[in-house]
Length: 244
Image (cartoon, rainbow, N blue to C red; front, side, top):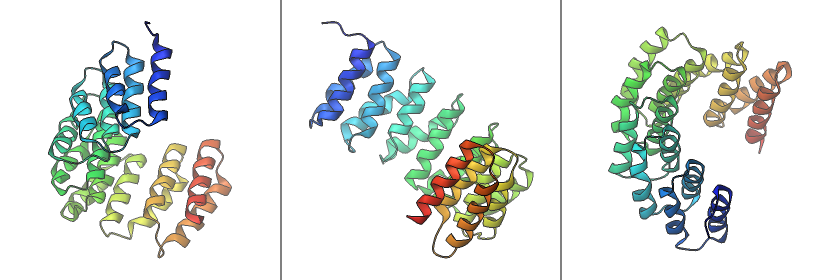
């Protein structure tokens, strides 16, 4: 029987739900079909499965796929995997023409916590897209690149985007520059709700027993004056997480 797109997607989801040990092999077979929606579904499902060397070897070639959404989602599905092949795949995609692919690669490098990524992330601090610059700066903090502090400070002085500054303040804080927390929290008053949401999400990963009280107070003040539903939701979610 020839299945249409909806039936193929349902079949993939059923394979995940049943949780058979070799389900990934059947799911991987859908990566070869000439149906973008089906391939995207298969990639997402493979990313949900437990770490598996065969899944990794199946996904890696797709980081070079002509479709930018496929590349982006494959890199995301590889988060949690380690190895030279994964590291190199992320590095290659830092120069991708699509910003979402570059962002996914940067986040992957941050997850790897591999200090060798430092020089590549530094190069991304001058990317044309503010979100890429933001995530590269935060990524340097995540990998513990203390030698990058002077570069981050210099680039921060030249940075004009509030959204990018969220990443710089976060990265510098993670590298020990605690004074930047105040600057980060001040961006809760930024005119852009996108920036305010980004700040809330960032402080959620910075909170500890020393700064949690101050962070929660700043978020509560921001929530009381927040006019947008989107930012209200983000602020409340982070406050709930910090209180749990």
